[in-house]
Amino acid sequence: MSDPLSTTFAALADPTRRAILARLSTGELSVGELAAPFDMTLPAVTKHLNVLERAGLIARGRDAQWRPCRLQAAPLKEASSWIETYRRHWEQRLDRLEAYLQALQAKESVPQAKAKPRKKK
Amino acid sequence: MSDPLSTTFAALADPTRRAILARLSTGELSVGELAAPFDMTLPAVTKHLNVLERAGLIARGRDAQWRPCRLQAAPLKEASSWIETYRRHWEQRLDRLEAYLQALQAKESVPQAKAKPRKKK
Image (tube, rainbow over all chains, first blue to last red; front, side):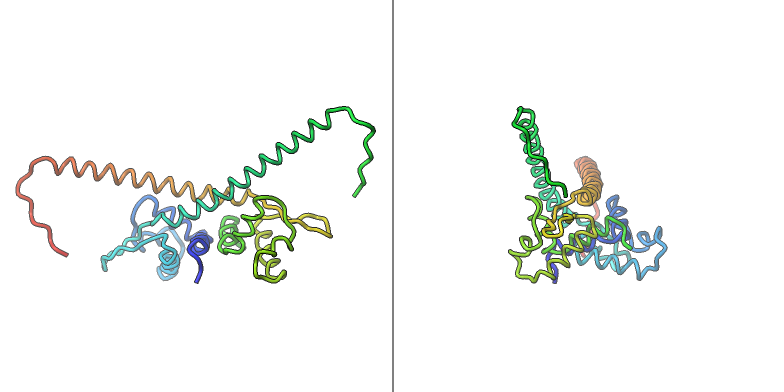
């Protein structure tokens, strides 16, 4: 059993599943409607829908005749939050690096005694 | 061969790899330093690093003695952008649904002829 975040990212790691989610973002669709633009059989599309349903990214209607798929955005919100936290860390790190480089440049602009030549690689 | 976005999401679909990326967001680390907090062998950690490197999420230093790992945030930015676009669609959809419900409520507040009783489930 995977943790929820891993399940979400694994479900997103496929272009067909991402295209399905993108189409569902405009409203509910039946399996047939979802399958139409893909060059895939209904069972192949159903397999992808099962992966998305297990990941909690879509839900299916209860109507036995027409079980429309609708998206559930909560897991995506979690995935997005994880990436954004990480990106913030990374940006802070770049800020620190920039501050360090500025400090170095400020030091270099002060006249100094003859510097030792750097060792070549 | 997977498309780049699928490769990124697949690389993120593992808690150890996400923990490695989180630790690298504070600076460069050697494989040994990265392996320390995990109850894993060096080869097991190296396997995860190879997946991250193939996905372009980390880069390794050229120094043969100490090949520090550093993160490369560009693929994550792509992944985050995809999710955010999708979330915006979803939010717009919720806005439309809300507008529709408000329109329905406005209609219901107008006195009407005796309504038919709703069919029970």
